[in-house]
Length: 222
Image 1 (tube, helix red, strand yellow):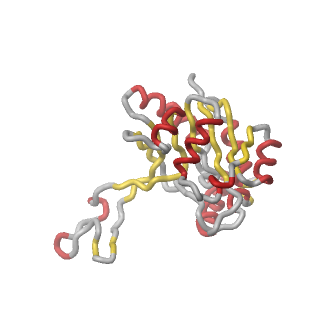
Image 2 (cartoon, helix red, strand yellow):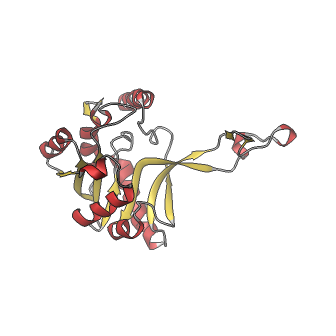
């Protein structure tokens, strides 16, 4: 079985939720939780934590995974993320990268294994990457009024709206060589791996965080 390198990107600061990446979660914290999930995935042969935080790098080292100090210009976003991705492809070994964010704690080892299997299958079918998404069929409006629906007699049920997809930070699988070519984790023909609402939770603020903790505890008890 072909293997992948899991990359866990964690920054020191977060404007909406301070210390987000190491907040308590489950029996540890979000970063440790993600490292330990990935350790259980047979198809992951290397785990790399990239951070500008000495504390987070120390956590990674204690867990026995590779810790890479992120240069300031990539951490403070004075350079676009495309430059950071090229930088990673220059210093991190492996033929295939799996972007694995701690802010998606309900993406577990089973989903990672399924995604990796699908990824290599879909590469053979002509896709160039894999990204996790969540279906979105809701009414949208902008300052000019309805955006994806009509009013009055032409109004339809939400189930009849064109299906859109929310990009989630759960999983992105990409050939390493493409990071440099695209400056992106997603290609021109990505395979969309659909997740449920729970697995698609991406912690951005305190409400996401509390919701993710609640769902995790419910699923752990069931």
